[in-house]
Image (cartoon, rainbow, N blue to C red):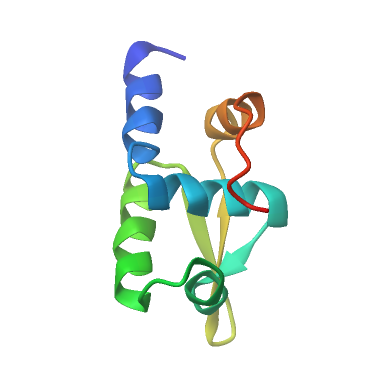
Length: 91
């Protein structure tokens, strides 16, 4: 891993909502937008905007199952960083 890789991950985690989404995905394994809206109490459009940033930073990927898109962490560096940070964001 180089400095650019770390920079992209830190950029992805630079907003509290994106950090909460990533933390939730770490603990739950996968999640869809509707569940994120319910749990985080924000609009679907706001969740979608932040999911796009996380996807563009190569932190998450979306997988379609029927009409539902499930998101999960796909970046090992992001997972390691989240595991090493003691945050109580998903409780």
